[in-house]
Image: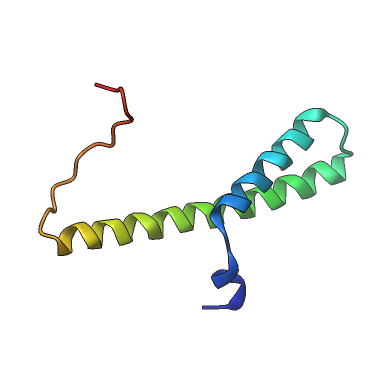
Length: 80
């Protein structure tokens, strides 16, 4: 695993994605700046998706190790 993969932090990446979206929605970026922001956003999105997939796999392994391998849908507090 490379150093950059080990240093990736999910929450700051989400904040950066939000900032990129806000910049692009503002309409104040040039076409070239918009393209660069979009490319950066796509790369961040892929990294976030990878991180989420790895976290999901870790959770599944932990649940299986504890003998409770039945999947259940996630429910937020207050949902029925």
